[in-house]
Length: 90
Image 1 (cartoon, rainbow, N blue to C red):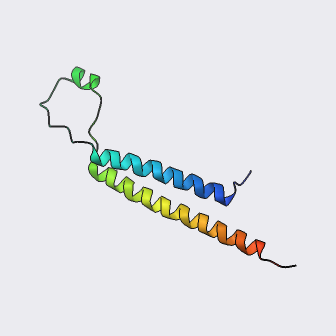
Image 2 (cartoon, rainbow, N blue to C red):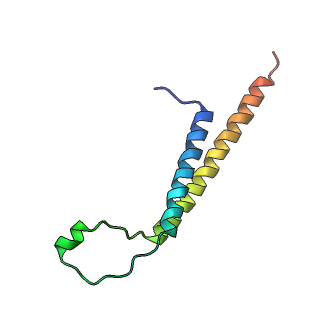
Image 3 (cartoon, rainbow, N blue to C red):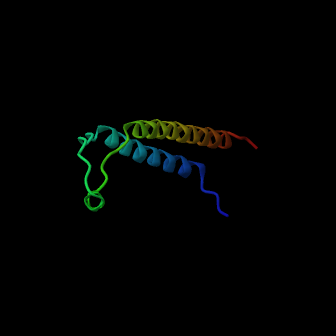
């Protein structure tokens, strides 16, 4: 099993957080569709589901923020560790 370098993991975490935050903000900003009268099951199956739960989107935004902060900590720790290794005298 190969362990990826911490810097790569931190970068991947930041990219994933950015993607998640972008999607969450799009979901929050999307207009809520108006309530429509009950339709037959046949019509409902043909129509795509566009109703996004705003609360779930906001929770996803907070999760993405936390993920970004954790990835930044990984990058900071990686940088500090590399700096310590470079400064070691033999």
